Length: 377
Image 1 (tube, rainbow, N blue to C red):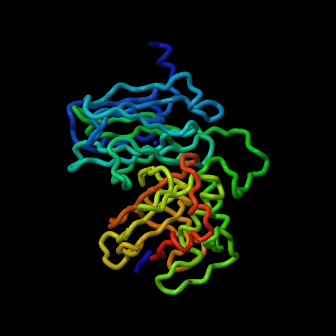
Image 2 (cartoon, rainbow, N blue to C red):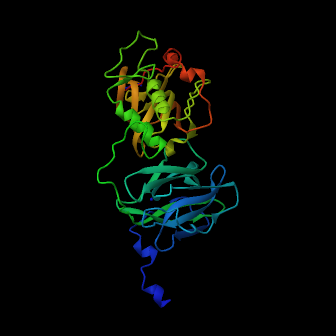
Image 3 (tube, rainbow, N blue to C red):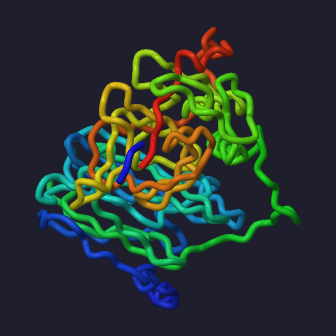
């Protein structure tokens, strides 16, 4: 890279009264308003939509949080009324089984006339884990509008305006029901080949190599690998770290030809989370209002870089990467992906199964054919 979420009934608090934060709907006027709230004791966990170029129709999906933090054990999910028209195709997305929505991101059409895409930000009910899911006409970039419940709150519904399409939305929040579950007396430290998910194991492997060099044979050296001659491929290329992490956890091997390199199931940048793999292709990010403050790869055909996501906060992503700023050792660097950019930013989620091991994957000479260019500021 380069730089520079009846009388008996009257005794209960209504869900609306519990909402600590109501976001004003963002978007156009539409023909009618709506104010859809989850049933008492339930939380927003997903959305059903119909969409094409934009979101034609939406309805909320809600579930209670069980004593163990699970939402999947509910006998049935609540689905709110459909708001909007019948255009587009149906789809549905939701949080993982122990997560609830505590924020949304919105991509809008020109002039904020319709909602183009929802990004649901999902918060663990039992800890600090987070992820996001997208539904609608995915934009491949971070949302231009975000609505985040205040600390200690989670989403219980959505209000907005609609006609033939979904024109405007605003999140409704209340107290977040964090659940304390039994935990081991001492926290388990992440190590190679262990973890709660494939993503976590990939990230943990890469973090274990900080300040070390993963060479072309997949071996770990205690310090940075030497820099090769200008333009040459050597040990400590950025792909060597990612290849070694994927191989260590038993994930499906990458495909290198044709470019861009394929590291698994392609997802949107808005869905990116810890352990996902970022592939940059001639991608240069420039700080708004500046012509000299930038980061990214070279902009020519050889400008490419691969890294593993360590953490994410909104559009700010921390990468575990090797051969950044020509330093052939594993480092953590943080970048703002909301800056305007040229080139391609592709995010992959590693998977297991599907492809058989190719000879080139097993070939210790991978460094001579599939090395990457340096990244930096």
